[in-house]
Image (tube, rainbow, N blue to C red):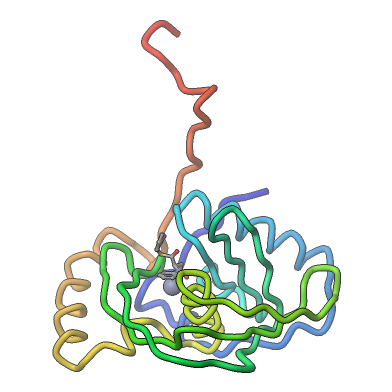
Length: 184
Ligand code: K1U
Ligand code: ZN
């Protein structure tokens, strides 16, 4: 498994429409493994392929220790509305309140090629919507009011200097049992 670089706001790939996956290949399985590793290293609960510079329509989500792979996901039903704060691994240190459907039903394919449907609310439902948006080139800041978005973009002008090449380079978390102590 490898840690992938995460593209940050301003990288054109984040605005691309992803392409339907037509075949589950070893390359796709590797991508999914790497995406889970990258998502965990970044302490996220989801990650879409476009965030790591790939255009396959695939995302991973893990809320409450249940890893979910979403290949060609679509929202087939939604109800209600709920506002909650969101962040994005591609826009570090920026947060904003976003109105989303309170409950969604997602249809997707898993890595075994099986189509499944999953109903979700609360954080899982929000993560599904956030990741599916990524797969269509949409970011949570697109939902903010003109004034809030203007504020976000002004802050990002300073923050973006930390990400040369519009990439965020992660370091693997040090496993607790391998942590160096002063005695070593
Ligand atoms: O796609 C991404 O950028 C990952 C993003 C997804 C997300 C889903 C739902 C709400 C906000 C963001 C994150 O994982 S960033 C924030 C995060 O790690 C987190 C958010 C809420 C609770 C716990 C962690
Ligand atoms: Zn995001």
